[in-house]
Image (tube, rainbow, N blue to C red):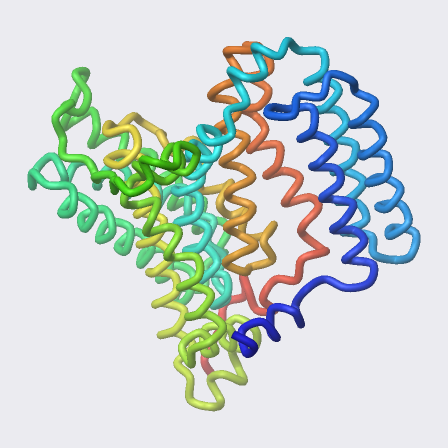
Length: 400
């Protein structure tokens, strides 16, 4: 226990960052006290707590810790804004919209496809290959997942079909990026357009105007009967889809592989300094091919979850930009599994909240449906330049 606690304590934020994290937490608390179950009806409480958060953020900012200071200030401002708006609403509407157990369960459902794609994108970029094609690989996975489940009659063969299709698509991107040394941004964009056109054509050709059948085998949910006595946890974890549990397992597993295994060291070495890695006998091409193909397989798993685990149907362009959001989560999370997963949860929460907001306000629901894309812009604009990407990402390697 001590050996586990020491590394955790060593990584805990200290100094200015610790103060900034306190400010971020206070901003969240300032918002939370105006929501159920506390539901404070005076905005003064939110103002006091959030004002302290902003002051801490300013103090950290002027002492040089700009990034986390800005986060604390933003948390305080946003926390008061939400808290103030909550005090203007009736308690009945708040209790209808803000049901924490249901919100958390929906957040997990919306975040799951993003987690698969983000972890896949992280492996690709850690090896030095930018994968803009995550969107297309997710779409390919969504279509071939439901096609395989329909034709083979079982969900697990549909999932395997999706994974195989994602691997082939990623292989195409790998050939373009690694051996042909094409511009990786243009290559990934081509993959996205190819996937959009191919899935649209096959969908119309195979299923026509009637669409996909309604009796296709879907990925099952895992029922945890022992949680029946704990209503809050039962709503969240009692009946989650199997793919959600796979995503939860994938996050720590990817961290172990990337940072605690020789394979992970090779992936990071190839992404940081491919020439040095090649000099010591590491196959730069082999590692990059494997990482890109793995990214396609994982992104396809996210797409398959959408079609045969979440919606149990397929529509043209059903991924709706989730691949780009996953890529932003990678940047937002500083190319680390837990950071990327946290960003995916943030994006998932905004989608979950938007789903419930029509009970309160249709216009607010539309606003929150756009929030994941706004956060994507913020992640790209604010993260690039502050986050440190792998040194060789996006740079083709030519073996001398």
